[in-house]
Amino acid sequence: MKYQKLVFILFLCLSTFTFAQSDQDSIPTFTKNGISKPSILSTNPFGIFISRLNHNFKRKASQRKELNISLESGNVWGPNVKTYIPNDPELRREMSNIAWFSRQYLVEEEQIDAEYFEIETDGVIKGLRGDFTIPIAKNQELVVGFRAFILTNGKFPFSALTTDKFIEFFHDNVAGGDDPFDRRVFGLDKAKFLYKDRNGRELNLGSGDFLTAGIETHYFYYPTFLNDKKIYFNLGAHVGTNLSEYNMSMDVGISAAGVKQFDLNDRHFILFGLGTNILRKNAIDFQDDNLDFGTNDFIGSFEANAEYSFISSGKTYHSFGLSYYMQTSLHKKDEDNYNIYVRDDDASKSWGHGTRHLYKNTNYWTLAYTFTRKISTTFYIQQDFTVNNNPDLQTGVSVKFGL
Image 1 (cartoon, rainbow, N blue to C red):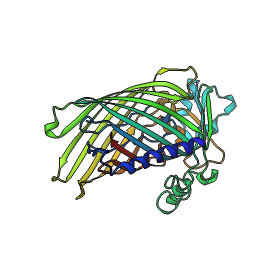
Image 2 (image 1 turned 120 degrees about the horizontal axis):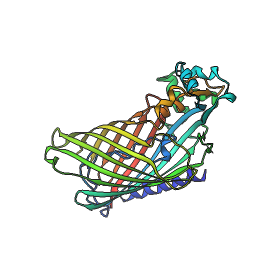
Image 3 (image 1 turned 90 degrees about the vertical axis):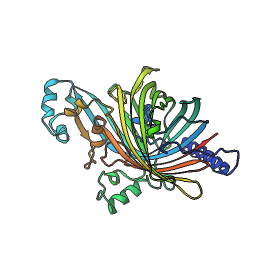
Image 4 (image 1 turned 120 degrees about the vertical axis):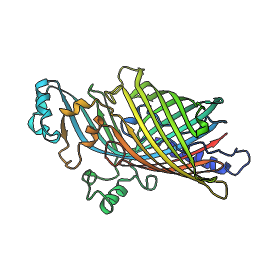
């Protein structure tokens, strides 16, 4: 619990300082630069342990140093599932012809010659991120950042929209029906993260436990030859160092993103952004006993983003953005064709998603509102409509300002 309190205190102090300073002349006016978007990376229970890449939809390199601090909250849920990966080719062929949810009834667990892993997730993952942008040339910049995550039970008021109770209230009254994921069967507003990988390494964490942290370095170059057509793009190179005891390693990646601006008049405009990147996770391992957070060495992602902005009479930018984010699977997809999934005896609804969707591309939608003047403040809400192992619901707030 001490980590949870530390995260909240740090973020609140930084936010209070920022807002307290916002009316002082010592804080330079923040200039809106492309699509206003903080990190919208999900608090995926596996993804937080690697350096996934956020897409950059800025129009140009920053002209002064900038600081961005954000806090995110995502509700994750998946009952205990044991997964067996058969070694016998004949058993694989037999299982591939049987529906995934029925395979467990045709074998004896104790007699399966197979690799094995086990997952159970429950709780609200809180994330704290910080990015410090440093201009290094007219069209180049360096971004140095950190990230840290803890597991909480999502009690009100710190997780108003991401508590189990609110989500089940939504299911009951808006969409989803009565307890569609068996949350109530196992109890609401609890926290547990159990994972045993196929090498026998494991983590078993509860409410208030620290999950993972990391530091990141991003280099961006902004070519200008299409700027006269109001088309802006950037190329990036990325290095992320994972500092968790469960995955001490370094990831490397590259990215590309572009933005097109349409001016409706001198106060109203629309921007469209497309971005893609690829990450080589665990390019360098700093210890021999890292947990296996996915059998795919390379993780790619794509994002499409649209934003409408207008300038109010007080010279404040108001921006409304909608983005679609897709990421390739953490595990190699072929195994899902013959894996044997064994559910918890008390689980009956949607019980396989948390495990099976490690083999599927993940995606989610994010709706964001940003107002920008002395500082830029963003609020967002994120939904995983396809229930693909990302948080059922995630919210975030971010503040960004020049120095």
